[in-house]
Length: 375
Image (cartoon, rainbow, N blue to C red; front, top):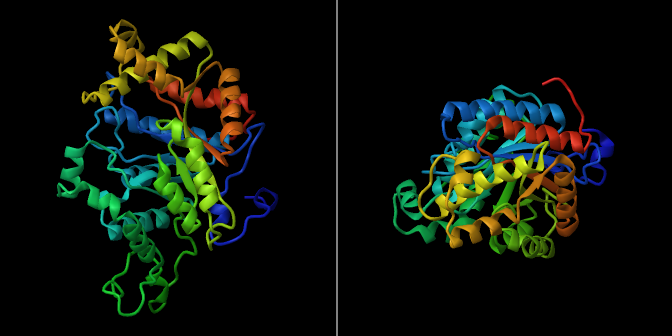
C-alpha cells in the first residue's frame, strides 16, 4: 500500500484495515461472498465460483473478499468460513481475505484463534477476522451447534467471549489467569520459544452487526465496524452514528472506520437485472418463511404466484437492492455512500447464475474505472 494511500493512518494494523480507493469510486470497494448455490448447481460449483470471484476481485482492485458463516441453508455453502478462506488463499496473492463473519457464540474462542492464526500463517498480512454474535441460522440449528437450548446466553456473553479471543490472539493472558499457560498456535508464543521467529502480523478483529449493540461495542473498543445494510437497511444510519459517537481511539484505530454490506447487481440490461433480483427475493421469501432452498432461476421466480404478503416482502426487500445497468448501480452506490458516510462499500451480488454474479462485479469495476491486472 502506497504511503499516500494511508495518510493519517496510525496505530497497529491501520494499513491492514483501511482500504485504497481506485478509479472514480467514492471509497474502497470490497466483496461479500455468500457462496451461493443455485438450482441445478452443486456446492462444488459454488466454491469454484468463489475462487473465480476472488481472483477477479484481486485483479480489479477490490480491497477485500469476505465469506459469511451460515448454517442449514441449502442455497448458501459457507458453513465453514475458515476452510473456504484457506482455499481462497491458495488461489490468490494480494487481496485481503476474511470472515464476514464468524459467529463467535457458535465456537470456542480458542478454536477461532487457532483457525485464524493458521490462516494468517498461510497468507501473512492478508487475513481479517470479522465477528458476529447472531447464530447465522435458525434457533434449532443454533441449539445443535452450541449443544444448548440457552441461546441467549452466548449472545449475552459476547463481550467476554470477544475479550477472551483477543487475549488468545495476542497471547497475553495475565499471570494467575486460568488460561495463562494455554496458547493459540500458530501464534505469538512461537516467537518466545527458543529459536522462535513469529510473523509480525495478527488478523485484525472487526465487529459485525445489524443493530446498535455491536456498533456501540466496536466504538468503545476502538475496533473497525461492519454493518449489514443488505438485510437491515433501516438501522444503517443510526448504527453508524452510534459507532462514531461511541468511538474511543485505540492501538488499532485512531478514528472510526466503518464499512457497510450492500446488495448490488449490475447487468447490461435493466430488465435482466430486475429478473435476477426477483429470483433472489423469492429465495429470501422462502428462507424467511421457514422453507430455505437453492436459489431459484429467474424463470421460476417469474412464474411464481406471489401472495399479497409475499409481494409486499419482495417490494420491501428489493427497495434496498441497488440494481440495473452499470451506470444505475454506480449512481445508487454513490448515493448510498453519501447518505451513510461509510468508509468502504462491501458488495454482495445475489443471483442464481454464477456467470451473472461474476459479470456484475466486472461491470461495477468498469463503471468506476477500477484497474485491470492479470488474475
